[in-house]
Structures are given as structure tokens and as C-alpha cells.
Image (cartoon, rainbow, N blue to C red; front, side, top):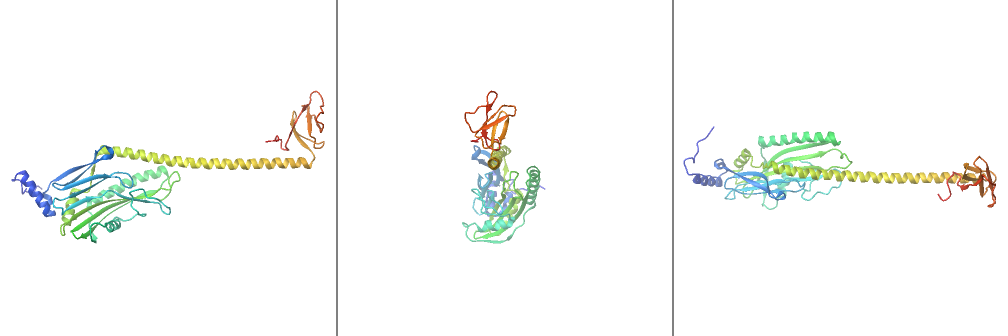
Length: 371
């Protein structure tokens, strides 16, 4: 239902000035203040418009695209009323990674955490880490509005479907955890609401190429600041207009996804190459061990055959009749005629005559000497 407009009969400039004046004095007066849309550019893509965030008209706004732990960009922004008493903040995505039971070096920009946690537990640690705002006291929790919870559930359902599909393809057993929460904090200047969605990607096995995959959590945090007694009104205004939710530019997002796909494909290829190099090295080492073993067995067989020849006072030769043994003593020379006839002798000048050829003296297994 339309409501009567208090300033409809006033000039536009005067109405806007009155609205801004009300905004500066009371959070409840924001309902009379129009919203302005602010565009955040991404320098990495030539200052291409990346996202838009809204703030009350007349508020100072500063936004940026941040790439922290994962390198995936996220919008952040700070909007402050003209008198500085009211403020809304969207933090860059805060991420941490770990591998259970294994040493893991966090990438630059990651938080030094090694576990999944609920949103309210994360917010308590987040507030406790702030050291530039003077005394801060956590006084309790705050409700999370339905639209914010619905967005978290939608994210969980989408991630569950995506990760389930990846499990069936790669052999991974992964699942998401999504939780929301909000806390109220008192400061010397007033009151603040800290709200977060914590999303975790949990892995219960190693990857398809035998690599341990890190588990990852990311927290999206927004903050509302107001004088004492006015936080709830400002929080309702922020929630009703979804001021914490940036709207991304689809064209920019397409470029980001293309870049991320290239990075992911390159990382997968590196993992596959490393795995293949490892397997090839294992294969080469196995082949070398087998070759050494076979050579040892051949040498052992050759030595055994030579010992047998020595014990039987004979020598093995290879020639026209193939490989054969002489039985007329350990003859130094042997001749054959190609028809099964052999002649062994110690006389180097002996020659049985036409049709005979001198044979080669070999090991007992038929292997030539020197091999």
C-alpha cells in the first residue's frame, strides 16, 4: 500500500536535504532516504565494472575487489553516513585451508585456522582479533533474517549438487558445510552487528591422482555500526534492502570463471604430470631392479655351468654343430664338421682337414666369454 509522501509538495532538492538530515540523526529515518548504486571496478581486468553495491544517498562509499587466500576476487565496500555515526561494511571473503594430520603451508592471505567452525564461533574469533577499535564487548547473538538464511540454503543446495557430481567423476568424497550467524557487540561509540556465512568444502579422501586435497572454509562477513539504541533499526534497513549483497556483472564473472578454469586446468595438469613422473620413475627403478636381478641369475647360472664343466673335466664349444661339450678332457681347441662330428685337441696347429671348422670356446651355458 502506498503511503503519503511527507515531502511531495517540497522542491526535490529541499526534500533530499531533509532526507539526508534525517538520516544523519536517526536510523529509522532512512526509510525516507533513496538509495544510490555504486560501481566497483576490477583493475585486473582493465577496470572493468565488476560489481555494484547500494548505499543510502549522501553516504560516502568506497569499494574494491579483493583477492586474498584463493585468488578468487570478492567485492568489499564501506558506506558511512555524512556525520560518521552510521556505517555498513562488507569485508572481503576470508578463507583458510588445511589438511588433517599433515603439515600444510597456508597460501598468502589465508587465515591461520585448521578446522571448520560455526558462523557464530568464527565471528567471536573475528571480533577478538580486532585491535584498533578500543574496548569491544560481545553481548549476545542477533537474529538472522529469512532472506539471508534462504540465500545460504540455496548456496548449500547448489554446492551439494556440484560436489556430488564431482564425486562420481573423480572418486572424491566431498561435501559442503554452510552455516549463518550474527552477534551483537558494544563499543565506546555505540553498537555493532557482525554477521557471517561460513562455507566449508570438506574432503574425506585423497584425489583421483593420489594427492591429498586441502579442506577449505570461507567466511563472508558484513558489519553494521550505529549509535546506542539505533542498531536494530539500521540492521532492519540493511536487511530489507540487502545492502550487504553485491550484484556482480555477468560479463566480468564470465572472464573470472574463464581465468579460474585455466588456473584449475593448469593445476590439474601439473598434478597429473607430477603423478606420471612419479609413476615413470617407479617403473624405471622397477625395471632396473628386474634387470639387475635377471643379470645376477644369468651370472649365477653361468657360474654353475662352468663349475659343472670343471668337475667333469670338459669344455663347452659353439660351432657348426651348435653348442656342445667335449668329453676328451679340458681341450683348449675343438673342431666340428657340421654333421655331428667333433674333434677336441690341445694342439693349436691341429686341423682335421677339409669340411672341418674351428669352434669358439664358450661358458658352460653357451654364453661367449666377455659377455
